[in-house]
Image (cartoon, rainbow, N blue to C red; front, side, top):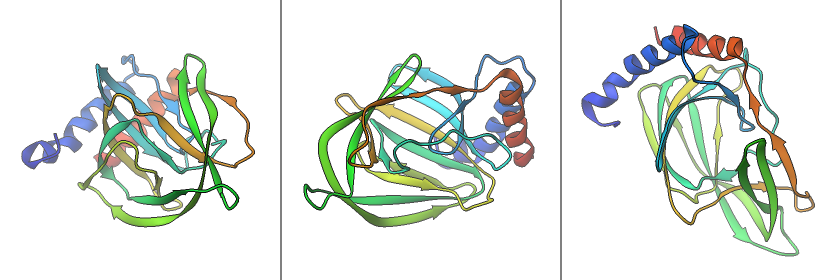
Length: 205
């Protein structure tokens, strides 16, 4: 999907998709994600999913109740359409008395994400990081703790392709004493979805 000619065609394809959503005739509904971006879920077929992620100070955000440090139950391929994103890997080691965080399982339900504390407590520190710009692609295997960081004030959008890995869980690091809770899913209304799609399409030209 992201090699050679296919990669070169992605901005044009994304622009067409975003303009179609911006016309108001699409069934796509945006979701304000706790990790700081607005997600436009384009396709979900079996183990594969494709979304556009948009970071913008002009769009409403959902707040995280744990932290930005997380890992996926799926392999990620992310292509930057515009702007910059820093992929920061986390060094995580099991700990008890000196733990800085607890590992939480994130289980998606109809009404939102159920955040469940696990018995695992860990020490966390920053690992390696890489910054990616327009036209660049990066990959991340399932199960790798990381954070996606967009510079303050930067307008950024990516295409995210995920492939689910059986037996893996979506996890997040949070305060050791945090209890189980439900994070409501913040779905955008039709106007907000259209506005977000056109906002991104305009930056693609």
